[in-house]
Image (cartoon, rainbow, N blue to C red; front, side, top):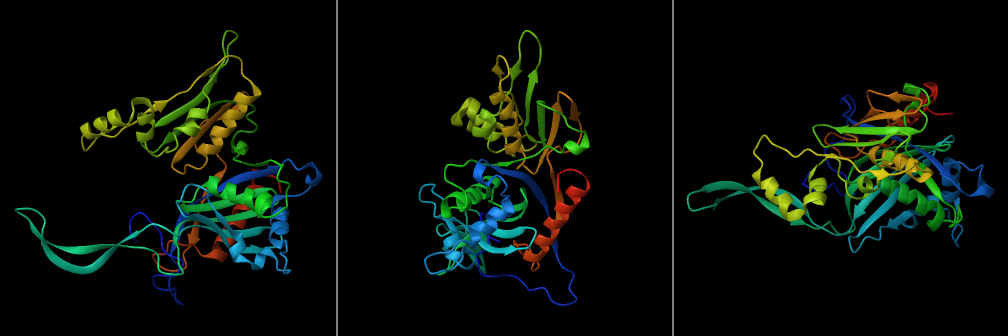
Length: 367
């Protein structure tokens, strides 16, 4: 595929034929717990709310299930042309399953043309090279920049995201679908889509006191509280959430501390075996409040999306000292064809249902 992008809505690659070994790809399955503040509809679960939203009729009597154009959300971020489209979506009786596409009507894709020419690249170098080209999406198509496959079962939300799709985009789409695109929930109601700690590993750990996140040879961030009669301090998530957006790289952290010019100078000085690594700690001094406790939960929510991060959690009643404390797991998924960037729709539904059943059997989540 061209660098910096995905495919187009049109298919590509060789289809799978009978007798072929089905290609697979491993992806992280993320878990979230959904809740809302609509007291009159307190009994309504996420899967039921999705059914209600998709069943709402327009003036012609057509349900939203049958109106793909009306399931498109335009993302209001300047003139980027980005849209979210709930494409395939199915009622599985006990759950609702769908695929969310992050599409872009603007921009260019780089293509490698497999024709060569001999060119002079410098005063002393003449080489045979391939042509590079950039093209807009063909008429009637849009570039796909990312995908999310999601399953709502009760108030449990499971999803797999690829490429430039993010959990925040999926959360925003669900909010838009339920409160803006339809009147399933009142506009005044609040929606929460919250990451969960894997408490089944070490029991109920109680109020979070310390949260340590380690990436693969990347910066390490610690959020903790030193409980003492004299002083209680909380290293909270505001700066982590706002400035340390890219956990996979230390550069944004260093830029926040040193500024762009000094950071670029430092990067230029690094040798081939060197890389930036930082440890970032932010303190809020004084007595702990409910807001600061909630902030630890918020930073865990942010960090839960970082698939290369190991999360360790310590609470007043226990700790998860080793391994990944965020409730998620890795699963294999079938590809519709060799080399595809898409996942097989039916197989993803089966695999997410398997994760749901496994989490219930293991006591990680309620039925």
